[in-house]
Image (cartoon, rainbow, N blue to C red; front, side, top):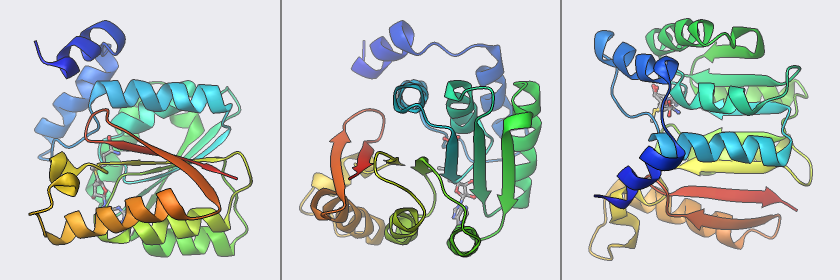
Length: 209
Ligand SMILES: C[S@@+](CC[C@H](N)C(=O)[O-])C[C@H]1O[C@@H](n2cnc3c(N)ncnc32)[C@H](O)[C@@H]1O
């Protein structure tokens, strides 16, 4: 048995709501690139442990990671999710309703670089960020997060191992380079304390100092 299957089976079993999200991706022709269930459970626990109340997600897809995180929020908690594709946001919204969590969640359609900049300009603040969209803008997203948060907040990002390519010295693909640069930033920036957790496709966890 693969390690990931063992972890999924024992610690991160999906209920029918989460299984239906995956089915909805297939039915609506969306890419099946949600976080795996063990990463979803990890996000849920991080939200709970941090006592987060106001999450900003970048990259909603069908709402799978959003449901895990929203389940970790207290009743008065909020999740704002930025998504480029209106079709994806529509599917995510429907799934969030089916999960009974839509009262906590707002979807904002458009390029997340612009949406994030607008939210910062409006003075919005967040205590938990989950970055899971276009790799070329990961650095822009973490820089924006640092502009609208406070010490103790968590910034989490998915795919930071990029299928192992970031540690393959022979791999020089564009997204690999973006992710290496992003990881270096998170590891070295004096405003952050960070660790890369090798769960799923690699999850970066940074705490704002
Ligand atoms: C990997 S999927 C997100 C998966 C989701 N977090 C989950 O685990 O259920 C990436 C999503 O980011 C969106 N995306 C890509 N570029 C974007 C951008 N510039 N602004 C906002 N969303 C973007 C894609 O449309 C896609 O839905």
